[in-house]
Amino acid sequence: MSLRALRTLQAIARHGSFAGAGKAVGLTQSAVSLQVKALEEEFGAALFDRSRRLPVLTEAGRIVVARSAEVLALYDDIAAALGDERSLAGRLRVGAVQTALAGVLPDALVALNRAHPRVRVSVSVGLSAEMAEKVAAGELDAALTTEPVRPYPAGLVWTPLYRDRFWLFAPPGQARRSARDLLAELPFIRFDSKAWAGRVIDRELRRMRVEVHEEMVLDSQDIILRMVEKGLGVAVLAVSDEIFAGLKLTCLPFGEPQLIRNIVLLERQDRRGGRLAVALAEAVKSAKATASPPVRKQPKAAPRPRPRRSSP
Image (cartoon, rainbow, N blue to C red):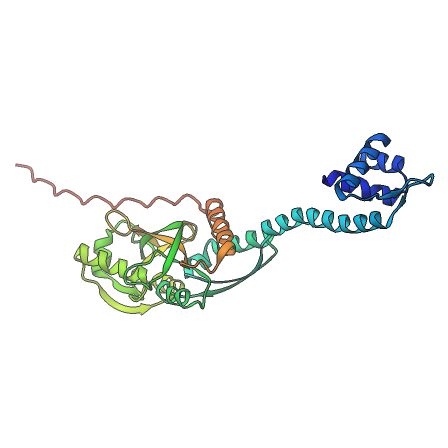
């Protein structure tokens, strides 16, 4: 039995003649007759009463026409189902670090909505460590976080998305001073040390053997940058290139070599986010590739003046 023969049978029932059906499906009248004969042999029953001038469906023929319409509809629905596969539907509960929300995530969500308008994404903000706990507990389907720093909850997996770089931020006009001098001399505004990025910063400060004068501990990068802008101290933060490029503060690379952090899509091992999380990850990567501007170069620190030798 062929689908084409079933479509021909539907055309005969619709047009009332073999000739009319042949024109509709692009076959000769004799080819239509051969397809009908093949179906009758397949089902072991006459489908048309040939004693009349125009073909009239028999009882068996009416049954086959009705059931074949269902078969063809199911077959045609496969393409629609594949379309639904490409156009996803459902709700995804996502957490995100502040830099992702201030940077690439909004553009990624716009692109995701255009590609999959039936997907609903709810977003919450928090520290990476907090969101890892929520993902592990099933309160979030996925989260854009810093790559986990031990210890972290068991049963988590992650997909790399992009990288942020660590910078020392100081008030304007300090670009010719070294990062070490600024950290040692100006008040230090600390990013919450409970955050994974905060642990990385503390480890590098210890490696540098720099003793900072801690004045504030805050968990909002926007507030920290505002404090620095007001001249209240210096801070070390990991930010996206597109955010960094728009800042008018003194920005010096932090770490030797400059430290980076990987931003990942964090999920449980059972992949609760499924195909929705995969689509979000691809949208984030695409938005990042489109949005990231070249990072402006920092002026080099001025060389120390050499003492002049007195003339003999």
